[in-house]
Length: 71
Image (cartoon, rainbow, N blue to C red):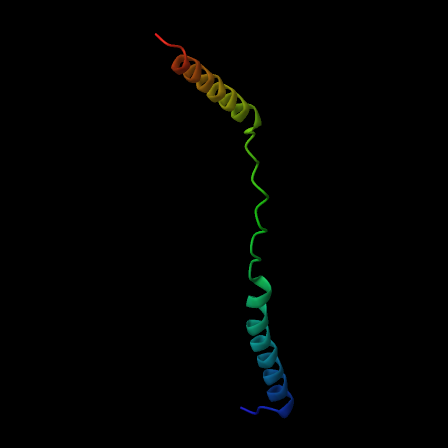
């Protein structure tokens, strides 16, 4: 079995390429993190808050009038 210098050089060149690919490809194949989520939708509290404030004010006026009227 006669191995020439050319065969040894080709073998080591292929070995270096294979090892290089094994070291580089996992970095290229790694998945990217997902993008950050969008801002959540804001809850519309204006209409309901206005109704609650009006009802609270009406209740307070009713209680104050009831307290000031003598029986």
